[in-house]
Image (tube, rainbow, N blue to C red; front, side, top):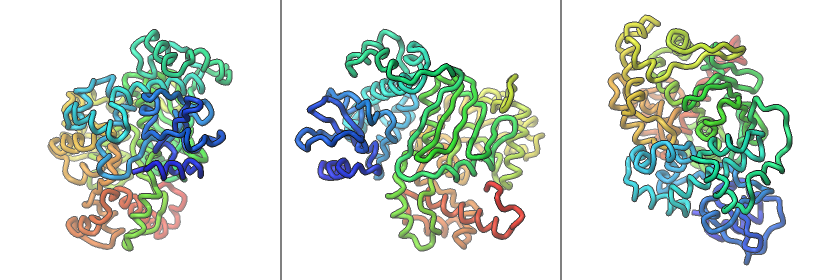
Length: 484
């Protein structure tokens, strides 16, 4: 818990480890800031601390134009008590409250509306609706400052149902008309691509995720080289090209403007896949105490961008090598995916509906047992029918629904929970590479050895996989430099 004493110290030190974990309201100016704000420090008597930007805005403060709270890393609670609220926040920032309402959001989390409200109020000082409203406004403010999208498009991309409601709320909350913020934006004549910089909490190295993506990239849909990942993506019915490239303190996200209406779920997906919001200093302190783990400070969870793809590829990769699993996924893409008339990446991964309607015999002809093909078809059907929702934030509901799909066992549940749902405690104990890295055999022994690392066993898995991959490279000198 961040006490006022800790917040005062972090603010005065401009400690980036706390960036996004709390915000400071300055009573003399009426603005609220990140703890890394370069402005002159406010007097202690003029400071009020809030656990979230929504709580600061609820109290009447408006965002600082200098440190720009909308660019802060996401709130990253590090204890079990706040896990539920953290999951809810992920879903809210991805737009699920607008998509499904309070009842739908609560159902994904497996709780009641009342429990959800209590959890977010306790953790963030704001209700789910207030959190969503602040996130919509901050998203709009960021798009106004960093893009040249028309204001109407920005309003709808940020999740507002009407331009009138957006203008009124923006003016009421920020004491500025949206057009005034737009005047401060740098002018650009290049309208085809939106560019956003996503900052990470603490020290960040994009190389492990880029290596993970390169090793699994499907020709025709993805390309990864020279510190840049590019793909064609369908999100919420919107189709366009996106790219992620490494930056000093995070990544640069480039989107074709056709993806602008889906910008909130896209940003949430990228932040989740690259684990930008975790507090590695806290996690590494726990992992370094385990003598059986290799060193590997700062190694974040490398996740998949699209939950359906990640789950399907986990099934395809059961009991086969990474190379063969990738080959099967590519054949699936070619057989059932959609093609686009464009240069560069031009294929889209099949939708749940496309795979759900496929004959398992046709899927099996790609080179897998019929039972596995049936699992792929049933997994897609569960997603298409809404019986299974894979979303970062709905960890337990996703786990439970996955386990009910015929053909999906404990390894697949744990792997998908780790790579697609960002469960920090997921650990596929039956994974042969993890057992080899630990130097033991048997799932029970593996589970027992890792138990002390809970709730960070997923990060332990990252260290073990990384060590195993490095050892393979050492044994195969001709393969050095290839992504693992």
